[in-house]
Image (cartoon, rainbow, N blue to C red; front, side, top):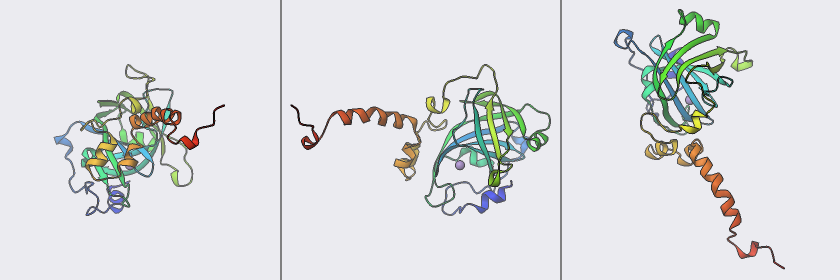
Length: 230
Ligand code: MN
């Protein structure tokens, strides 16, 4: 998928996302970029991106990455994104393509564990090492058998067993932006976005709600609702 698909879907006069005008010279940046952007769009997902041939190969991972090697996370390949997208954090206006809040959840560099990356992608089995702040060590993206519209776009993101494997839920334990330390709600507030919607993507807020619920129940506000005592 080319950058043209990326450009076709977006109105850059309205969305603050980068238009992808500039391309990166490989020689200036020997390290290949890696980024995960947490995106509270229609559905919450994590956009997993690897720089290759001057663009960012991109997969949308609905549940986000897992450090547990026994867990396979669905990763739907989406259109390539321009390299400067890796730094985008902010609000895509409602009604625009991908409308919602975007957070730079993790970033760093990646290195292929295979000789021929293009052949590996073609084959649907790409092994690589991540050098991020949250995600590290050996991983694999494996193409799986999708059907209908998802045919050929459906992959699985899996952690390999190494010193960085863990059973902890990294998405819950480390919910903040790696570049600004903000939660989705903070980014939405700062960017004039939908704070309430963004908050539903922040795990801390979810657990706070859960904690609040019983307290509200046990303290009836209206005497009318109180059951008569005998
Ligand atoms: Mn997305």
